[in-house]
Length: 80
Image 1 (cartoon, rainbow, N blue to C red):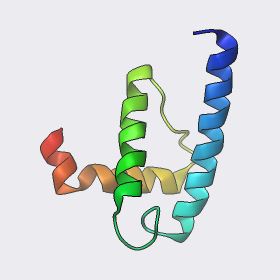
Image 2 (tube, rainbow, N blue to C red):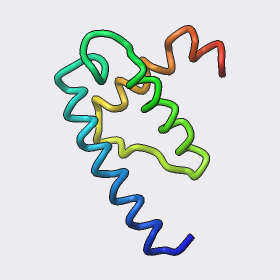
Image 3 (cartoon, one colour):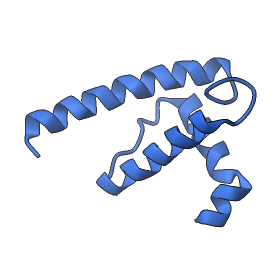
Image 4 (spheres, helix red, strand yellow):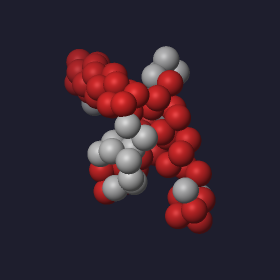
């Protein structure tokens, strides 16, 4: 992959992380007050990103809270 494409992808990911963090500051889960397919898709994407050594920036506290809650769910624990 070219460095330019990699940088564009990183910039896009960072923008998404900021948006998601703001959303999670207002809601427990992405869609609202219950865990939905939106949470599943997002957490799977973030777990996949670990393969390329991407970690959401630590300053996104709400994103970290949400990610921890997703990983603590029984189904997630069973899959780890």
